[in-house]
Amino acid sequence: MALIIKGGLVFLGEKFEKKEILINDRGIIEKIESGTIRGEEIIDVGGRLVVPGLIDPHVHLREPGQEYKEDFESGSKAAISGGFTAVMDMPNNKPPTTTKERFLEKIKRAESARCDIFFHFGGTDDNFSEVKKTNPESMKLYLGHTTGELMLKNPSSMERHFREFDRKKPIVLHACDDTGDQTRDLDQTHHNIEDAIKLAKQINRRVHIAHVSAREEVTIAKRFEGCTSEVTPHHLFLSKKDEKKLGYFAKVNPPLRAESDRLLLWSKMDVINCIATDHAPHTVEDKEEGAAGFPGLETSLGLMLEGANRGLIDKISIFQKMSRNVASAFNLENRGSIKKGFIGDITIIDPKKEWTVDRTDMYSKCRWTPFDGWKLHGKAETIVRKGELVYHDYEFC
Ligand code: DOR
Ligand code: ZN
Image 1 (spheres, protein in one colour):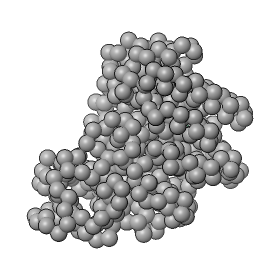
Image 2: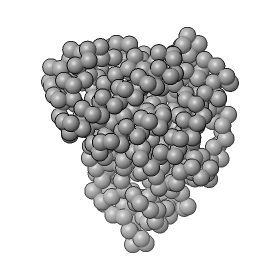
Image 3: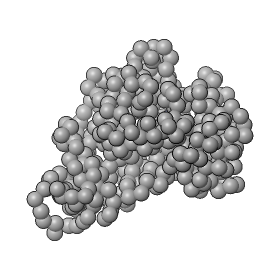
């Protein structure tokens, strides 16, 4: 059945305009017009923002291996209710996604998820032939001491992956070094990124810097136009100042930085390409025992709109960084824009909806969030996935 969305302010990449959208029965956007589309299956979204389904380039949905923290069903419900129609899952599972067999298993398991899930393949010191056999669309390399099993130990492995993996496909770099010593960590992070960017530029290979958390990282990333970057809402809204209140919940990689770094990140938003949640759910018990990571899928959009309310960013930039720019950084075809011929994934947002983040009322399994109790404005109200209404009036259909 075809679907017509009318009455909304439609995001067209550089501006919002009052338009109607027709998505055909194959789930493809067929028309974007003003006042001329007729048909039966109409939803009237009067006054709402109509944007491309949001895409998150960085999540940890924990399946397979740690389904007690999250799985594709709970994680994809968190994604949809947060406004995302596609997410990109990281390879640091237990066991890690570093072989063709494990990669294909993940794809199969995710088939019934509520949103589309793409997978970053993990590169290690000795899986070059697996990368070649699998030929994934993106890879992740861990350059710093943080996630145990996946960190590269041999200094020549990064260069070999950089040279052997298709250079038009992005390699995501996790550069931070979780030593517990903030100064050393930052020095090491800059050093890792500096080396990586230099080489990427020299051999002209695409790279993407995960979760930039300090201004220098952004500056280094910009030395090469084939390099894209992402920032998380938690590094934009939280800093060391919040650590006392959050206690063991404050632990995350990269760590929360100084308040001055947080403010400087906002001032660099014009050169940071993407917003990524780094949704990394852990149970309360695991946090008590020192696990690093925050959930983020259900709070990210509300927080970014809060940034707009505070005058720190404009809405056009938010939606570019949460859809179009992610699709372009990761070569996701026919996604990330409301355009004729593109996939009919649409997020409809009530920008005035007042709501309070409530850790007991979330789809993620982890049951806590560093933003518990925050009052936000703006929430995804309706989600259309490939032309089908999957979430409406804040409820799954
Ligand atoms: O805080 C983090 N948590 N940073 C990471 O790099 C990994 C993630 C996780 O998987 O829990
Ligand atoms: Zn991560």
